[in-house]
Image (cartoon, rainbow, N blue to C red; front, side, top):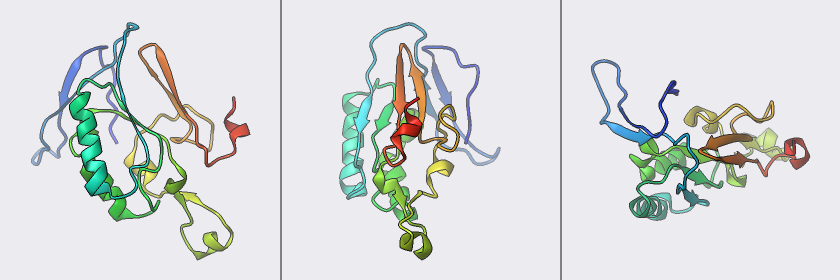
Length: 174
């Protein structure tokens, strides 16, 4: 993960990543304004099925229709099987460069939780996808123990709150 710091409001930035010899292509993004003004965002959910066939077309069409969107709000069920490396690979591939230019505000759905082994399965225990935290850099401003699943993001004059419907709601209420 990489966190950009000291960015100016409502400013277009370009970046690329590399090791000094090998570099990615250039990406760009615009920071939120520090003034209250209207903004748009993409809201999506249940990408989990036919990711490369349907999700790829949906996310690209959404970006085509709203190229100035400030972020993408993912309402859960990004993949069908929580711990499937192949499905996560397809999810990122389908979004392509869009994932590098629009911030993702992602909330896990029930499909991001699954038993990791037979012991968990027998005990009816579900674990958050082993890929969730390594693949996202989400805020750590929520409840202890629920990092990167229960959190908030302030965008211009709005607060977007991620609540995890797979965890007890009374613990998230505050």
